[in-house]
Image 1 (tube, rainbow, N blue to C red):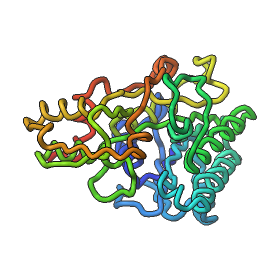
Image 2: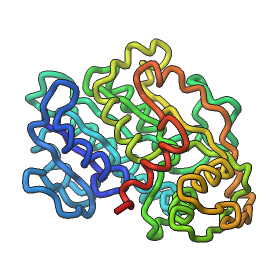
Image 3: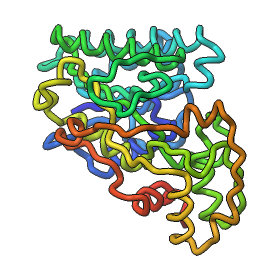
Image 4: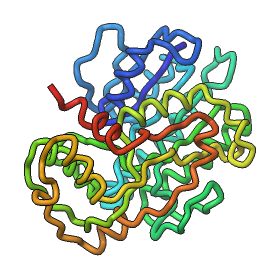
Length: 321
């Protein structure tokens, strides 16, 4: 099986690439070739096919076409804040280039079966404020450019699946931790910074209060879910299989609960180290996540991290010597 990962140099993409190289197979099928695509790629093993450049460039799409993927994990995107600041760039990358990618994958002339596409969508498709609870039937009402373009691609991937051109599975990703401490430009970066700071016994200021509640998942768990989505049987979910969209199961935890967990794991007084300086706009988006009805996703074998301790350990494992 030939596997392509777009956005392979990113936070989640790099974690997924590592997992794919470790397991060496998709279900019962051996990975015969693995390709990594991104604007900039770190050094890779010589057996990885490197496709470096912008997704919207014709030369990059041509290289993808020549590779002829049986399975594509599509993670490449302009993130939320950058998309809102530059809607034209988001349209070119998150919408137009993504649809061009779908066409390239679907046009593979030697395909015995429709190529599988695991698409990294986002909970931003629900908009704000979120209803309580969020269920599989909650309508998508994106309030930002990023969510609108992701939702459009979900719909068109499902349509390509209906027509037998692709076998699409869209996963709506929650907050994924722990991102590197270098400035990411993401408003939600404070979620990762909380973990890094308390693990190192350092003070941190959060733009939300201790009762602020979010949906959490480690990058390791996210990569595992992406891999599982490639082989799960969407038709087992009678209600959602036509749309082919699933919100990933999550741990719903408050900042205070995370501080308690980090304090216990790392032997620090987290409540003394954390300063809360709530910003209404930030808390409204990142601190008021309701209950998520994720039973249908769980029935398909998608998972959360299990508990707060496992979440923290997994999230910080790449930074532990």
